[in-house]
Image 1 (cartoon, rainbow, N blue to C red):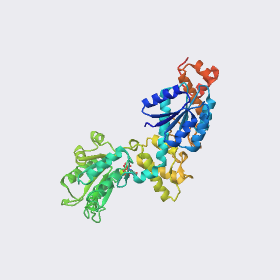
Image 2: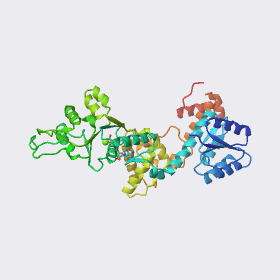
Image 3: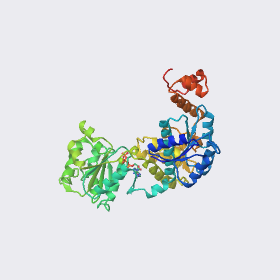
Image 4: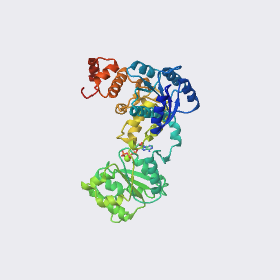
Length: 456
Ligand SMILES: Nc1ncnc2c1ncn2[C@@H]1O[C@H](COP(=O)(O)OP(=O)(O)OP(=O)(O)O)[C@@H](O)[C@H]1O
Ligand SMILES: [Mg+2]
């Protein structure tokens, strides 16, 4: 995500080098030869990242950091510091800098840091405007999603909804399969009819048959009265056979016949009766494997799989995670009567980094819990369940706004030592000299921070 970068340095050779490199990497660089000029430009044009030298005549880099923190608090500043000057780097971070890169500049590293800063800026903007984004976000009935994956799904659902054909909905746990089935029903000509969902895995095998197809009075010992069955109850509407992968094998031939002939015979009855139901099946199982393992009949599979709709896992939906989180915050804040309005940026980072094995349901539960527990207006990382909280992206930033999120001095030192070592091409004698440590101290720190190096 290329962005507009303001480069501030009084050294024209340096600004030119950085400008060319950043332009080459698809950024839009703008140069200023003093902090004063930079500050003025900031009032006139939007930027995504500021990259500034520290030592300049007139206003220095630290003061520029201070003034940007005061006047453009969301704008990340990356400072260029000399080797061996951990103190100035720390002073810059304290003045609100987002991160630092040491000179001589490793352009690849600089590129990484600027990208991260630009991403940080973009995410901040996104988090601030989440409520509005939810308001104008695309929906398909109650399904919410703006990602390309979800847009494709909505297109597919829209095309299939009007057809009275057999649909198989697949997807991992909690991806919204039932919601998709309800949406198909709501958009179909059968919308005025009933929608009935039955969980094929939840019923004992012997009950499932009469539950679905009904039975006549006296059909079996407990059948004191006749029961019409779900196919009959769903007449004129839609029947969702959920967890079809768990449909009992011995009952599969009967279901196949029912779907092919569009008539059914209630348990104990001697006549077939027609039914008028659209059948949708859903499963989180890989039916191909079930077929290979002879737990699922292939002929039934072809019958129910006329059109397959696959729900993408949440981790494939990009920033939909944030949209859904905001949606659930609104929902639960309202329901629990709590004045919670959204999420903080560090929470957004965690939600984007986490893999969501339980998909939307897991997110919904996490947000419900967080809204119930939180003391804040915007959810903070501490409100998240441990497994999600633990999921911080490997690239911890040094300049956060949340006190709970800031790196410790040790973390700064660890990163700086690693950085110097890289710059010194792994030469520990050189690195120790730059850092102002004797070799023994450096070795102790390397061991303590678990920094791996080639031995030299
Ligand atoms: N795109 C979405 N927008 C809004 N809410 C959603 C979306 N997808 C899922 N949900 C919500 O997430 C929860 C899980 O959805 P649903 O029950 O439809 O999933 P599922 O795929 O049937 O899950 P399972 O495989 O566990 O049966 C529900 O509370 C649902 O309302
Ligand atoms: Mg379900």
